Amino acid sequence: MAIADAGSSPGHIPRRRRLRVDLTTPTLLGLPLAWLAVFFLVPIGIVAAYSFDVYSLDPGPHSFTLTAWRDFLHSSVYLRLFWKSVRMSLTVSAIVVVLAYPLAYYLALSGTKRKYILLLLLIAPFLTSYLLRVLAWKVILGNQGVVNTFLFWTGLRSPDHPLSQLLYSRFAVMLVLGYIWLPFVALPIFVSLESLDRRLLEAASDLGASRLQAFRRVTLPLSLPGVVAAFLFVFIPTLGEFVTPSLVGGANGYMYGNQIVDLFGTGFPDWETGSVLAIFLLGVVAVLTVVFARFLQPRQVAAD
Amino acid sequence: MDVALSKNGARLLRVFFTLVVVFLYAPIAILLIFSFNKSAVPTFPLSGFTLHWYREFLGNSEIKAALETSAIIAAVSSAGAVVLGVLASMALTRRFFRGKAAVSALLLSPLVIPYVVFGISLLLLFHTLGVPRSLLTVVIGHIVISLPYTILVLVPRLDQIDVSLDEAAFDLGASRLRTFRSITLPLILPAVVSAFLIAFTTSFDEYAVASFVVGTRVTFPIYLYSALRFPSQLPQVIAVAVVVLILSLAVVVAAEVGRRIAERRFASLEID
Image (cartoon, rainbow over all chains, first blue to last red; front, side, top):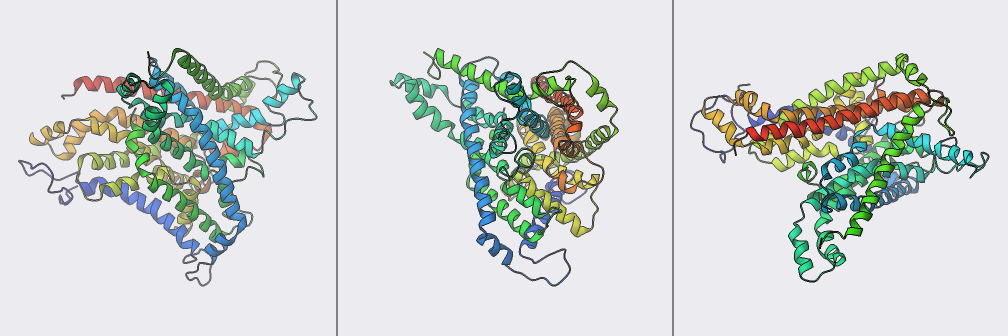
């Protein structure tokens, strides 16, 4: 552990005694950063190299080429699928944020004493198994599922004509994704509303603003960072989603993430094209993250 | 007058909140109901109460093996993630160094990477290195995924602790390691425990990345995913699902309650 104390900066509080040097900055950061370098950055680098054909596991000569990228950017199939996934994720995120806002508003501003218990009640489903919640919807939406058999049982629908578009459809994917993310989205909105200075609302009211005006001119603008964060918290993970669509999506609910998986799958693997699709998705997510970085402050999320 | 909400507004929102909570828990409740249902397919009308499916799953060695595999992977990977997380969080909160913003962005970046991209990246890495897929490869991936969560739990806690406690220990001649062991670690222990639990549940439930790097010993989510394609096993899967769901809910609630109690107790010990 006796590494020279190279990491401590001159700005540190002057110490009266020469300390035995352990747990220096390099000691602390070395292992986590090395881990991420080897098992996070290098692997992504390999995929990027693959997409330019600089590197390949196939035997034979390789050299830098943009062919796969050019094919991708000219292919209507992949780009159309990407836009379809963007539209689906945008819709889910928008609906979920609109639903979550009143929930967070209620918890933060109604003056209920049990707000943290209610918040936990809201979030707890998010912390349980993802696959099991998808499984629940499979049981509910299937042709022989809870909804349909309930309709047969009550005679509202004949067993010969189940509501078959419930499962294996774009609707099913969006419903399940919305269900999965709804509890989580309320959190950042709650945090931003909770930190709102209520005297601002009183001032607005004293100056003659109605509740609606106070909401539109004060509360909403001030909670907007939380709303943006919430939106991104859903949009970013759902954009690359492949598990839910593969379980409840069928052909109609097929998303961009499924295409990536299939290109690396056992059917007709094309790792080079798959790498292009993966790096493109990563690039989009990275741009979004950087552009909206100030809304994604971890402190805001971690605070409770 | 309440400026945020009128009486009726509050009432309306309470109704809405209740409806959403019902919507969130109804599917879980439906799983619970059908796990006790006699019929082999989950359909209405209900056909009577049975514990058959629970007995069946207790005798199903495949399910038990998968649960055990997941527990091992979750335990090892969350221990690893917590160790790395404590190291990184100490650096982020206790040290001054150049490029801190970039380092912290890198440490948190696994939060936003699409898991499909990370999964194929690891797959290509292990192919390149010639490492066969096994429990270890899943553990490696899960440590990367869980690391930022542990940091998000640990950093706020470290920020709360008065640095002068550390400095006092220094001045009394303790090494940094000793200071960490006797001062910092006991103070952040509740956060370390909840970081471990969050990492554990994250790993235990993780399907996307594991699906690319899992070996022949399948994890529980991998087993579940494949079982979802064979309806004959559905009732058993539902039974095990209910058990896992309830256990994980209990762990989550216990962790949160425990953390609050512990922090309140520690808060009274701290000098401000």
